[in-house]
Each structure stands twice: as structure tokens, then as C-alpha cells.
Image (cartoon, rainbow, N blue to C red; front, side, top):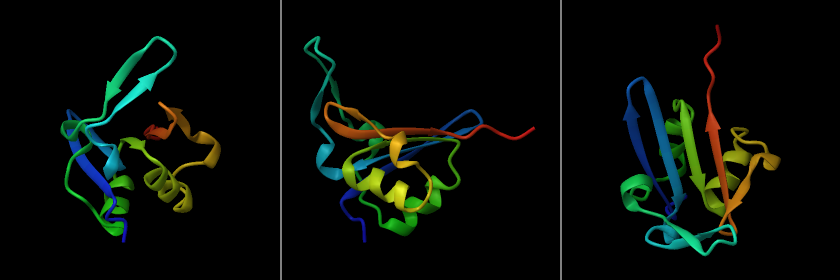
Length: 105
């Protein structure tokens, strides 16, 4: 069970955006670069409802755009083959990844 992960599904025109992060990151400010600026991790974007592994994977596999933030959620995506381990960057020292699906054709 991955109850330490929150997720929200956003529908924007034809896109299905799944945002998921480690639950303890919600409402934190993470530093962006050396400028002193920060970014607020919000429940509005990432959600506040904790989800289990199966539900998260169901939505990740159907999303056209995915935004992941946190060690647990990025590790899960790598374990499931949805993300290459080298495809993870950091945001304020926290693992972060975006996955965009390009339709064939």
C-alpha cells in the first residue's frame, strides 16, 4: 500500500493530467534555484486524498501528462517501468519527473 501518496486527476481539453506526490510534501515551499524563490506544493494541484498503489497505477497508465514529486512516487513509477531512473530530476532537492505521452500517428 502506498498510502503516503496523494493524487489528483485534471482534465484539460483532450488531456488527462495526473499529478501525484508524497503526501508530506503538500503545503511545503521548495526552493527553486539560487534566486531565493520558492514554489508552493499545493493540494489544489497534487490533491489531498491518499491513494493506494493500484489506483495510482491505473491513472498513471491512462494519463497523457504526468507530474510526479517525491521519492516514493518516483520510485514507484521507475519500478513499474513508467519512468527511466535517469529521467528523474529534482525540485528543491526532491525527486521530480514529468511524463508526456505523444500519440502515434
